[in-house]
Image (cartoon, helix red, strand yellow):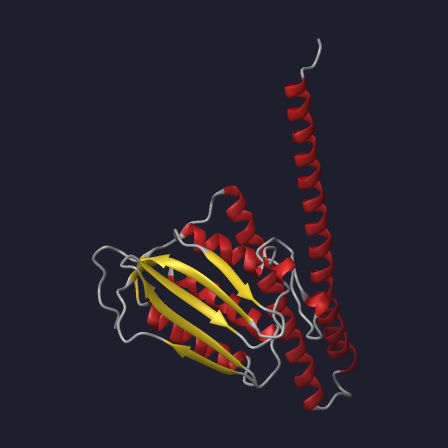
Length: 255
């Protein structure tokens, strides 16, 4: 049988797509292996020290090792959670438990927790006095806010200001933004920040950790709520991340 030009083009496209998917899986497995080994090695090292030299260690040393183990377990848990979220999104199995929720309260909670995680930053919020309740999965929106705040913290010098703001746009939509005073993102990289495993640590002096899945997961969660997410930035002048959420036609007043 003679293959037509259209069939050959389609076959070549399918081959390229397969190769791209295969490379993406290989890259993900490589990144996962690397990022899982580091905290596991830390846990193994500290636990061996505690087992072998428990009688020789003072209380301060034991406390330091136990805290190191605890931090590494938290990091492992976060990595596993990200991979599970990614897997659910790919399989179309991500389920949202939507309920009428005060976005104002969620934002205040997210900021309060971020202040505990990063005491060296000025984290403030600019919220309207009134906003209808939104039909959202509160835990997932908190996850989005946490990711955006942690991202701002990671790429900003200590002592700088991070601002979380909410404003209502039109009658049926709310816009949430997280802005920082970090180094910003080059224009050529801005369109890629929501890609999986894309990180910009290489061009910064601030060390980052993780698989680079946080913003990709944020995108999936926001879009699952019927919203949109995007970023604006200028090198040397910080970055702003925005996401929208729809508001119900007859929302309740947030308390």
